[in-house]
Each structure stands twice: as C-alpha cells, then as structure tokens.
Image 1 (cartoon, rainbow, N blue to C red):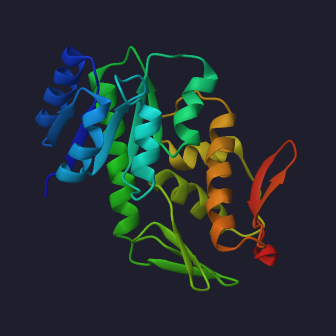
Image 2: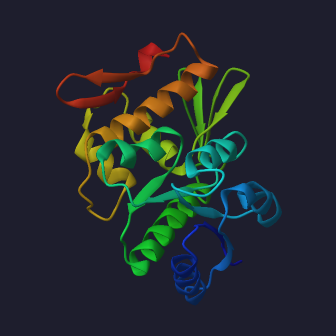
Length: 230
C-alpha cells in the first residue's frame, strides 16, 4: 500500500516541487498552503506522515503540531527557514519527530521521509512486540507504554529513544549513542536535541506512572533506564 504524505507549506512553488519528488517515489501526496485548512485535510486524508512548515498564514506550524499530537502519533517533520538553535528545537519540544532547515534539497526531504517511515514500519512489524520490566511494558506495534491500567502513546522517535534505554537497564548511553539510534544520517545537531526528546518521554511516562522516575540523567555523560525506579 502506498504511504500518504501531507505537505503543509505556504510557498506554493516549493510545495509543488516537494509533491512531485514524493510522487516520483511512489507516495500519495496532498498539499495545503494555509494553516487554517490543515486540520480539515488531516482528518480527511489521514496521512502516514506530515511535512509541516513552521511559518504559515492564519495558523502556524506549532499550533498545528499541537493539535495533531492531541490525538495522533503520525510522524511529523517540521520545516523552517529559522536557523537559530532554539527554533530548531521548538518543533521537537511540541512533539515533532524531525526537522529540516531551509533551504534544503528536495532529495534530502524524500530521504528523511523514507527513513522515518522505515523506522515506523520496522518497529510495527517486529516479531517481539511487547517487552516488560517491573510493571512497565512497551508495545512496538502500537508505539505505546503501559503501566498498570494506564497507557500512553509515543511518536516514532520518542519510542525508539526510550526503547534503546529500556532494553538495556542500567546501561548509560551518551547523547551521541542515542542520537545514532534515532537518526541514521550522521547529521550534526546539538546535544539539546536528545534532551528535548527525553523531556517529552519523561512527561508522558509521568502521566501514567507519576511516582516512577525511570529515566535518569548521569551528569556529564548521558542517560540510563533504571529498572528499580519503576
């Protein structure tokens, strides 16, 4: 089945170019140029991935990302012309899976889309779908975690990051190792990118197990999952 990509981009020529490149890679594509129309198209089209520009007329990319994340874990790739580090991280803070800074190559965008969809497909097709540790279980098929009767869903990147820690209790991973586990294109990004994702994962875990702090920061090194904390 062909994957569906929703492009939310107000630069018409750029959106048309991206759409053509993605359709040449056998994706089904819809395009929205105004942020006010984004959620209606999202509900109607039901995309497998969203390419979302940060700066849009009427409703910006931040608000759209928040609205989508309120009820969906569909992969979101933010695109922005702002190059300041805080702006790059902003999309990750609100639940995006990845970001691309303008100007960019359409081929790069297609490569990022393929990589992200491959990660989602790999996790959801895994033979061992559920792993449990001290009352906390992770389900790769649904990208979710359960603690008792409570359940929370992760984005693809959040799940992959937490799974890396969860699968090796007590092992300390530095930020570079964690970065390599979620991004396979050897990009150069700030350590704060991982910190941003960790913050989101911790917040979601706290929602289902408020007294079980299981991701621990190791000062000057990185992070670990501590089984005894759950």
